[in-house]
Length: 324
Ligand code: ADE
Ligand code: ZN
Image (cartoon, rainbow, N blue to C red; front, side, top):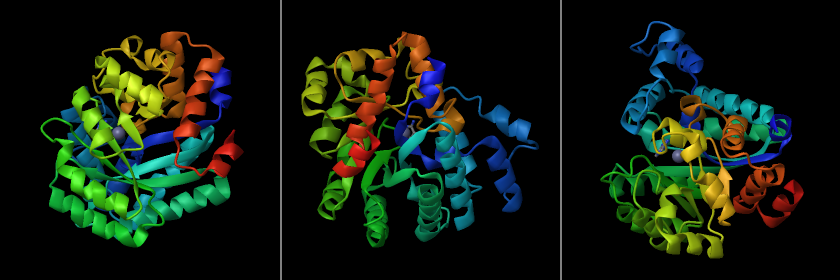
């Protein structure tokens, strides 16, 4: 099975580029940008990655982000991720970035997006990895902040396929963003949203009904509501599930308790993704392996995750056919 999974063509749909910052890169970029971290050595940084819940994850995540300053930093970050994709046989990736994490500390929107786009272009021309770019709003910030961010994205409309919504579901109802999402859709962006990771099933319904998402990020809480599961199956609304992230962040206590195999069995268009791979225990192959080991799924069942991801991707039909 391991050889089969390594060689299996993969498509990633739920990946935060900021979540690919490995301890070594955090340490090196801190040095080159003269950012002071509360760690003396790479080993100290690595030890800090041993968090176990969402709040401690977010505090390390925000600290890590402080080392990203220049366009070259965003290029290097994205390029390193694309090299991991090559290694994992990921043929197509749809990466998210969170501009507000950077603009609020004085890094220009253009610095972030141009660094990422330049690396994506190089990844396509030299590694053959196709891509789409998704811009996430943070649900813990205001509607006004999201509106301003949408305005900043307008000049890049042809380079950003969709807007998304992330950060903590607790105390941050997504209905606050209905109008921003409506404006984004009118401007031609597709929409996705994190919902039902920690938060209740109602958040998934709201993502579908209010934000009119093309797919739900995480969505694993859907199994609390049979009617919702039936809706996901009949509408072919995909879930971008992140197995290792869910275990690392305590959504499930261990992989064998994850509901991804049950979702596949019930006919949901469920996919495997890495979310924040540098922080959550691994990239695409690691996630596929973790699922295969926990559930003893067959090769065709494991391959189904890739078929689903091709279907759920934002590629145009001809590009999808080329991957099949
Ligand atoms: N941003 C990065 N990782 C996230 C996660 N697991 N949940 C919500 N927002 C995130
Ligand atoms: Zn995520």
